[in-house]
Image (cartoon, rainbow, N blue to C red; front, side):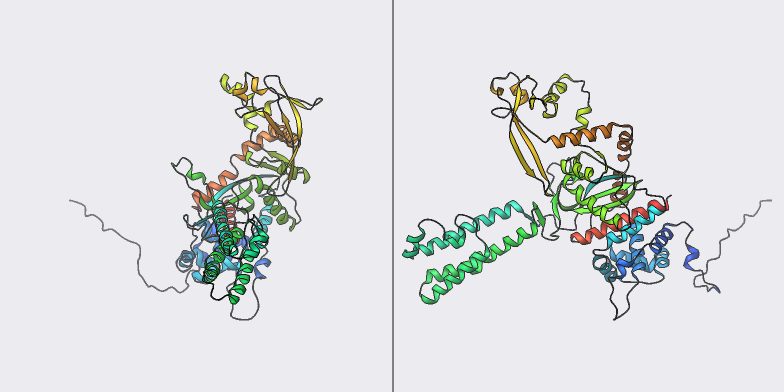
Length: 528
């Protein structure tokens, strides 16, 4: 007899069924969950910098501790839009538990992130770092620093270039001077007094400023009141007032915004157009509006960060370490003992700073790897000997010796000042027999003799760095550096998909990167 198959059974499913004891949100969240780590960390840190942002009176505000928890957890979950965060507060049990049922809208979230937290993210991050130090996760022993470019929330095509601005301002200045020459040519008395030179109030042969144009317009208007029938003068005054003066003011405002930079974006004036690593290999890579983000790590925890508007890393190290030093000083701590960085930071001023603050110098310089290479190809070995760092130095005679055994003699000293104001002294040496040397084409392609400009202080610092980097500890730090900062950048930029800022302005993007770093540290802490 065929056996009758059993009917399938299902678990009870009754929508809208009431419960005598409704479950709490806390019961729905597992122990050790990341949201609990974020909650516990923010509960322990000092929120005084945030609390000082609030004034008494008026309507009540959402608690800044709750808002900070929500933002940090949102960044740890790759949620960066204020609207998406507000949506999660309505739908996600983890966010509901973290906010205690509060549901701030996206405007409130954006205002807290962009305005309330402006200028205080460093203090909040410092408190998180102190928590990691006290917990033994960070020892402030070895500090690995590197930089990466993060694209700004700005239009790539709306840019002001410093070179173009200077060119257009120069053209405008010439137009102003030519117009005034035509006006003054009709005044025989002034023409005889000044001849072919520019008027004194326009700075002779130099540029023209908006103040000078304004003063000249006042003088011409006074002359026009005396000669109201002078149509040429009236037309010239109109051109100056309605065209030349506004344009000159615009160029001067652009120069102020540039602040020595090569460019800035019209939609985020703090962003500079930089070449991005991800654009390498493209047929015609164009720079993008971005920020240079300097970040230091230990044990793949972010220990310090700073944002810069310049492309190169060399001039960023000292401001970065100064910011870290101030942050650590607020908690009674000093800078990490050893500083490790790649060749992009190997400048004299950086080495001098490390020496001044008695920090371990494990910073490479551009030729470090080239000096240690053992080339198998004869052409590479031969090429190496013509590099200036390969020239032997005769200290007794103060001369360098080239591969042709000719002497480069001392010619004088020079001084250069870096972007940070550091004065570099260089000594200038020149050969004397290069034109007839058989090695001329290999050694010096320029016309005339071979020249060397040498900073002996930099050579001493490089020797110190070379000794440190090739020591047992230095080799260990070099190996560790390869998995430190780059891994953190990979976690934040690739895994967390934080490749572009969502706010505008240096202070606001600093807040964003600070939140991203705190979120990374929380993820790392939860994984321990």
